[in-house]
Image (cartoon, rainbow, N blue to C red; front, side, top):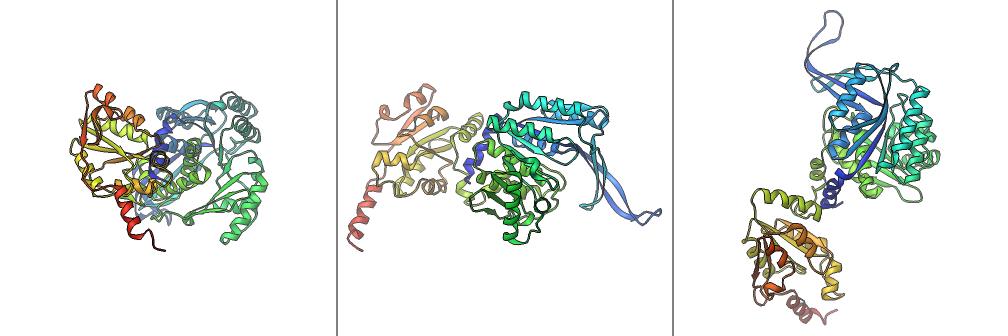
Length: 491
């Protein structure tokens, strides 16, 4: 995936409403030092130096979605105890809609306490209820899903087998998703995946896939066998199996599996990595990415998550940075218009003058470079609007361009004088100019000021037009003619 498309996804995240349904809990971390043995029993004594309380279970999916910039609602049931109240307050403090959070006075809210010393988990203490919901709470939760479910662009189901996701609740979820065309992505548990019939996508890990399929997974053939059984059992269109250090594998009906290798990182803690995968998958699908693209992005996020200790979130900046490691120097400059508009707004607040020019720049030559260097000298930031391949063909004929738009974009982005490159598909860059409203608009000396597209907009806003003469004897057409003359007759 291109870095610019990932940036655009996170720019759209603020318009995506996600619903998280599942087992909420609190994750408590006690951090300390273990430097002595207890005289009472042969166990370590941990001197606690720091305490941390976080949302856990389905709450960690909420955490990740909030960190990614989404609007989040939650539907679940917690107890009427102190932990339940604390959980409600924590969600509300994050701006999460808790209208779907039901209270059962007789239920115990789940709380898991982890004691950690020297970056190692010493012990975990669980206090929880695993009983199915009471009929009254189940009815309330189903009513909420039927009434409000259509408001969301994606529904994420986090099943920890603590009793919230009854057959009735799951069926209500899947019905809403199917009727409204909303993706319903499930992080499953247990060995009976038939209860997830109607889901868009399941995300078991390898151990969970073995339990659900009754198959010991050894190698890719064993993995494929397990996937085939699960897809049949749950009547799925797609299944994503996470494979720890081996990455992920996406299985789809009647298609070859997509095996996604892991991103090499030092693993500190896999706790909560599945929640990160679920959140990123959901955001990506809601944002219009394909299942394949969503899985690749989730794999990147999972690699970041396991490099952190405890149930940690992953930020858009971390995902963008990790995704842009290939072609780092050039790809960081190639932007989609929505992302670039936000950047320009911030730069203008800093008092920087924005320069804009545009062109096809097919077969980059010294004349182009001199022109762009001169354009950059007029301000503090040079943005290049680059004609797409389709746009170039309309302007210059079916034989052009010679260089693909992505290659042209990266070649130009590698120039120091260019700060950002943005592709456009129209014959003129008017839409770019309207959106970015540069301070200086630059075109070649063969134009008149009045003939420069967008000059009225720029000048009305207090900007100006600059005309730059190209270096004589330097042109793409001239290069093509020279090549044809020298090599055109050779086989």
